[in-house]
Amino acid sequence: HSSSATSLAKVVATRRLLPISQKRLEQQTQWDLVQWQEDRTIPREKLLKDIKGAEALLCMLSDNIDEEILEAAGPQLKLVTTLSVGVDHIDLKTAKERNIKIGYTPDVLTDATADIGALLALAAARNMKKGIDSVTTGGWQDWRPAWLCGHQFTSKTLGVVGLGRIGQAVAHRLGAFGIDRLVYWGRTKKEGVNGEWVSLDQLLMESDIVVVCCPLTPETQEMFDYAAFKKMKKNAVFVNISRGGIVNQADLARALKEKVIAGAGLDVTTPEPLPLDDPLQNLDNCVILPHLGTATFETRETMGDMMVDNILAALENRPIPYESK
Ligand code: DGY
Image: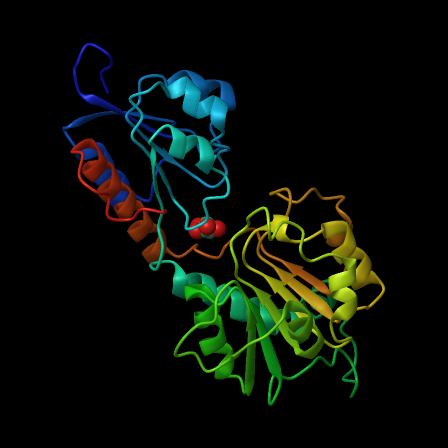
């Protein structure tokens, strides 16, 4: 793509999208696209340089869009649109002060993410990690009645922290596995939901499965610490499909090691990727996935499309269709 000689609006993208949405992004004639082409996170220095003069930034949750980046863009920046529903990687305060809109991708990723939540709950409760390890390392010997027994969901209590779109979709899925009671904790009581709004302590004490689906904010930062795990049932499993920052990871590792809780299933960690020598890596009661919640072709293409729609609207000074407020 050509550069500053044109009067076209500059759009900066920190990654390539999936094929269909990528094509749509590239084919727009009303903007000049400056896109990082390598399949790794754009180096910060490069982004600081590229963003200068941009009117819209298309970014990922793995890009740290802080004050320095927004400052480097210049006053014409109208939109930061991210390939995620989470916006905790963006300095929202500075964006607001500078009148920069925040675009995100709600709803379309709910099913894909809830599927991973259900998968992790089952994996953690049924010793999937130990099972797979035993197959590949020779630990699988003769059939033994009590070997790798886990906990069944029938007639159990599910506790959802943050019963928004994704939390409700997780509850719906786990309902099919026989859960008969839903408790939830969050800022507001949800109308029309077949569950009880309880205190966090009550949720921790009464749930057999705890699934975290709330956004990462200063209030939820490290809310799961050793004291919180101590309040949970010994047979309970803990699932996090939100952000790693919600958990004090050293405390989780300790709780899992001491069998304060039965197991954990994590789709998110701090940092990502999780270092190979992290204490969580060696625990056979901790199943970890590399942030796959939204990773389906269908969802990621739609997410990409929504970003293109947001950019089109922002550059025409129309309200953007998918705005995080
Ligand atoms: C999100 O949408 O926030 C997920 O973590 C990544 O797509």
